[in-house]
Image 1 (cartoon, rainbow, N blue to C red):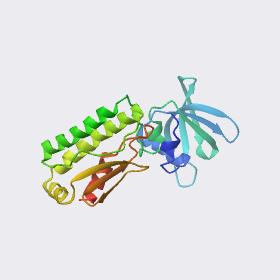
Image 2: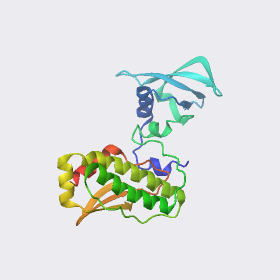
Image 3: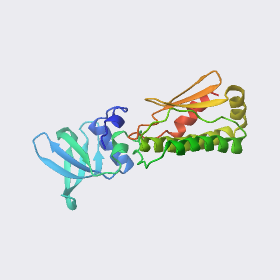
Image 4: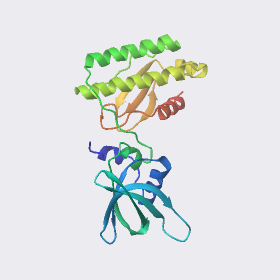
Length: 225
């Protein structure tokens, strides 16, 4: 998977920041290190030592191919020319310092399935909270995997709204402001309103990106109530 779409949304981190993040989060990743003298090493980062007067020092258990050895490399970070991060299921977590999760793998859905899901969305929220949202509207894509992503995100929004609208003050505020809800395909998560419609903007059809953060979605919904 090309990571460009994902990583362009986060800041770049220095080698030192990423290496300390590996230690703090106990991320298992093979580092392929080239030093400023041209030597190359591969292995797992065990620890980093840092003091006020010297550059951080890396402690690395070396590998031969995919086999772990008992050899330990003691190397100053200032001698590291470049690092390749490889062989890790947590590579997105590492490179984004936890800000981005690994995107889901999608199956296929039809437009009819998604439309049925929209109807079910409204029925479930009405049943569980007593709030009639109306059926969500959205311009649906043709791609079946993109449709499945819309289906999955609709389920996610439904769960967040049920929890939110079970709170009496949120419920009353919603009833006084909104009678419909729209899903709008966009380049980032944003929630706004127009007249009596609440609009949820998101990358609904981009299957290479993570889904909505439940925490961020909840905060944005609250800010519109």
